[in-house]
Image (cartoon, rainbow, N blue to C red; front, side, top):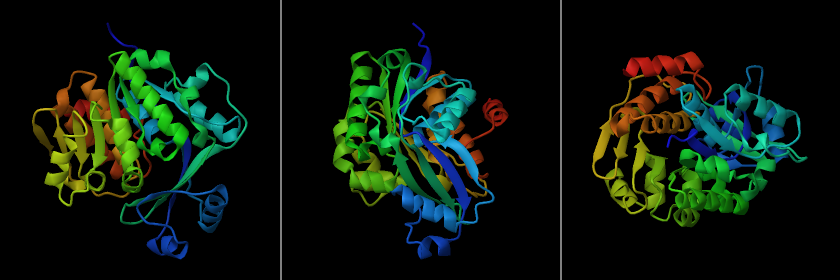
Amino acid sequence: MKKKYNVYGIGNALVDLEFKVTPKFLKEHKVQKGLMTLVDEDTQHRLIKAIDHNDTIKKSGGSAANTMIAVNQFGGKSFYSCKVAEDEFGDFYLKDMEDAGIPTNFDRQDREEGITGKCLVMITEDADRTMNTFLGISSGLSVNEVDDRAIKDSEYVYLEGYLVASEHGLEAMKYTKRVAEENGIKTAITLSDPSIAHAFKSRFRDVIGASVDLLFCNEQEAKTFTGKEDLLGAREALKQEAKRFVITQGKNGAMIYDGDTFIDIEPYDVKAVDTNGAGDMYAGAFLYGITNDLGFANSGKLASLAGSKIVSQYGPRLKWHEAQEILHELK
């Protein structure tokens, strides 16, 4: 029986505020370059005030949200569970999700008072992205925001790795995975960030439990999580962690394990200006592909092409017509 949704996602709902900065700025303000760091609201305000922010890009974001939007842009259907507040940024966030055609848990439940989370994304000239995140009300994301009915009507659930940083988020991940497995729904997870993969390795293992159907990570995350110094060692170790996995390698393409063999995906040669959202886009395109009969190899090609388009522009999203052009180009 055909499911209503290709993918059910759960993650931190954050309004992304993107700025261009210099490495000198990051050093002066003691910001760790290239990583995601959780900060308080005062720190985030201080950094925003210090930046010349005339060219701010504002989008509804959060890693899993970007991935769900990508699924929809290619022609799929997704559902998103998250937590935003009854405030201006919460209004903006849900309107953006509605415009993308993505139903959320707030279609059936009320929002609470509080502050919607925001992610300060700082892009340097080398296309690296550095994120300082104030989770706000999203830090309280719990099993209360999980929608069992939507899970049961999905082909895959997608768990955002950043959620392991919160006790409530961790429980929401476990609960979502359990509901999915009990109902024969496939599970996917992303390691999200090298710092998260390192700091919460045991929590990730607790969630993954060698039973997750599909794991997404980049090369650095794979090495950090497995404790291996080289990619070949990391990929062999990952076989013990997940049934199938994708390791993205930036300008070197990607490596896919389909449960039986390794598939090398060639990169598309582009000049990278902003890597923010590249991994999210890759996961979204790949999930669209495997839930629409493209197979692992062609899904990898689609994801690689989509990722190359994302890094060659500013912002974590494609335009809707660009996603359809990419699909046409693949055919």
